[in-house]
Length: 335
Ligand code: SF4
Image (cartoon, rainbow, N blue to C red; front, side, top):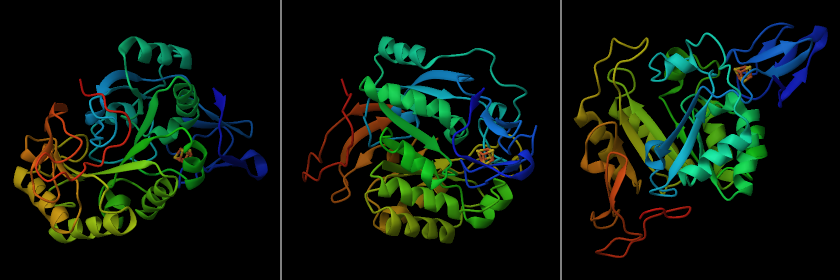
């Protein structure tokens, strides 16, 4: 156990965790909503510090991040726990239905050695919500930066702005999942404060000059109306800019959301069209085979970077036809 960052002491040995917008008030002996932060004798502790439940080496394209360090592999880590409870979670075994924290301790140095052995470009904090294992992620991030590795978060955006400010020096890129409208957040993701904190977090990432890509999982009957997609794209365009890559992703029934069918390919392609028509430059279809896995030139439509799944097949920095530059951040790892 490690004493948590970001909490306040209240009267009667209660504490308030302010790591995420839920701001759980936790009585002595109790845990927060995420179940991985515990009040012991009036102090808040992280129960998952140094206790990852998953460690894997993935292509950065799998996060998905298509405009950051293309072609690189990243050591991807997670602990159990999450500060939302999405009914459609694809990683529910480790985010929601876990029984206990991993018993194996993995020190920061071991992760750094693994990244070196694997020839990785950096680290991804992913699979569950990195906010709930912030203290561990932060130590890995600092050590990783010192060794020349990048750090990326794959997040639900339920992170307090002051946490984003604290780690901004060490964080290079983030993919934030915007799940639906305010009602969707409250009813399907059990987000007590709705969508607004996600918007606030995205603005904070932007203010701190962290590269942002956005994912939207399209679930039939829940969040797939053209109107909703249009509203979401409008927000992204006005607040994050037209250069922000947007990934529309197909849903497959899982966990508690089994009353909706898998997303038909044409719903995802329609969303891509809407976003492009509204001026977004880099728009992708994910979780299904599509021409829209590739980066196409926003001016003339020529393919700039061709991908199949998470593999880069051919790569250019700019459009081979008209010379428009692809917006790429970080070091290129294409062999
Ligand atoms: S991180 Fe966990 S304990 Fe802290 S406010 Fe969020 S859900 Fe509650």
